Length: 302
Image 1 (cartoon, rainbow, N blue to C red):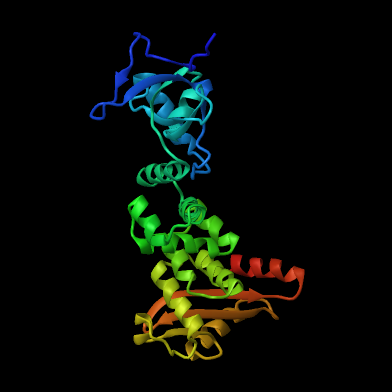
Image 2 (image 1 turned 90 degrees about the vertical axis):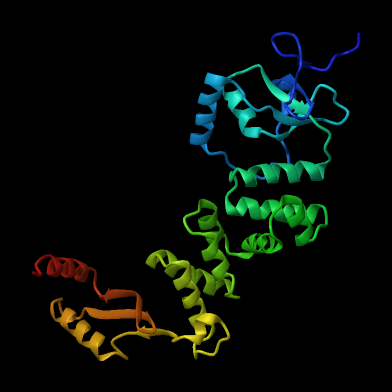
C-alpha cells in the first residue's frame, strides 16, 4: 500500500489559502516537522515564548509557518520561518500547526531565516554577525551581495562581521547587550587585543558613553595628539593626577591626613579640554589590618 504524506487538512476537512498569495495552508503534524538547521537565533526569549503560547491558547496560530519538504522524504518538513510558533505549539502539546509549503534551497533557507529574525529583532548583535558571516562564507558572497539579499547597507554587514574579531569577553557583553554595538565598533579601532580588553574594562568600570570611549581610544592611539580624527582637532584628553596637578595634590594630602599612616592616596581626573569626563580615587595599603583601619577611619569621619 502506498504511504501517504503524514499531514492533514484542517478540522473541517478542507485546505485553506493564504490570503493574497493563493498558497495552500495545510495542517501538518508537529512530529513531521524538523527545525531549520540554518536558524541564526541561538536562544529564544522565554518570556516572549510564554506570551506567544498565551496568544495561541486564546486565538490559535494566526500566521502559518513556512516549511519546505525534506528531500527524498515526502512526509517530513523543515521549517523556513516560524520556529517560535512551532516551539510554542510543541510546548502546548498541539498535534498540528498551520503551514505553507514552499520550495527553497539551502541559501534561501538561511537568507529567509535571517531576514525574519532581523526584521523582528529576534537576534542579538553577535548572532546577526555570525549569520551574516555564515551566509557570506558558505555561499561565497561579498558583503555587498549579502547586504542586497537581507536588505541592509553594506557597511552594516561589514561592521557586524568585524564584531567577531573582538575578544570573547567583549563579544559576550555585546551578546548580552550590556554594552552597545557602538561601543564595540569604537573599540575595533584598537589593533591590539590586550589593549582592547584594558580599555573595555574601563568602559565597564566607569560606564563610559560611546562618545567618551572614542575620545579615550583616540588618546591611547595618539598620545602626543597627532591624529586626523575629528576628536583630535579639538583639545586632547587630559590625564590629571597629584603628580602633575597641584589642586589634586592638595586634595590627596587632605584625604591622606584623615586616614591611618602608611595609606597612599591617589586621585585621577580625565578631562577633554575643560570638560570633566570621569575620575577615581584609589587607596593602597600594605597590611591586611590596614583595610579595617581605613574602614574605621571613614566611618568616624564627619
